[in-house]
Image (cartoon, rainbow, N blue to C red; front, side, top):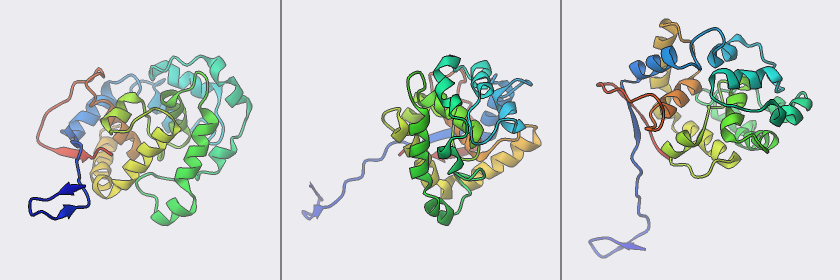
Length: 233
C-alpha cells in the first residue's frame, strides 16, 4: 500500500515504462524497406509475402527457404519437416485469412477468439529448432495482417518478458490494445509507403519500426520532427 501526501492510502501506484518513440517514421520505414535485404529484390521475404504464392493454411518448404534467404533465419529444413508433413493446419484454418490486427472489429476479435486461436497456433508450430523468431517469420507469411515478425529485440522494446507462445500473443494483444493510438498514423504511413513503391500491411510496418529501432540491429535510428509513439506494455 502507498500512502499519499495527504495521509490517505492510495490503492494504486503506476510506474510507467518509457514509450518507444520512432523519429521521422516515414523516413525511418522507407529507409528500412528500401535497404534491408528482407524487403528489396525479387527474392526478398516481403516480395514472397506479397506474391500470395504460399498456401494460407499450411507451411511449406518454400516458406522455410524464404525466411532463410533474406530474413537471417538460418532455419534447418529438417526442423520443419514434421510441421510441413501435417499439411493443412487446423490451427491456421481456424483464423480468418483477412483478420487484421489493427482493423478487425472488436466483435470479430472476440467472437473468433483470436488470442486463444493464436495461442493454439503457436503451440502447434513451436518446437525443437523453431523458436518465436522463426515461427513468426513463417506465420507472418500466412497471416500478414495479423502476425508481426517478432524476436527478442522486439519483445524487449515492448517490455514483454520471455520468448514463448505467451510472449508472442502478449505482443499481438498489446499492439491491438493500442490501435486507437496507432491505426491512423500507421494508415498514413502505409499510404505513403505504397506511393513510394513499398506496399506493406500495417502490422509489417509496425514490426519493422520496432525491430529497426533496437540499438543492437544494423539500422541506426534516424532523427527528425515527426514521431509515432508505440507504448510499452
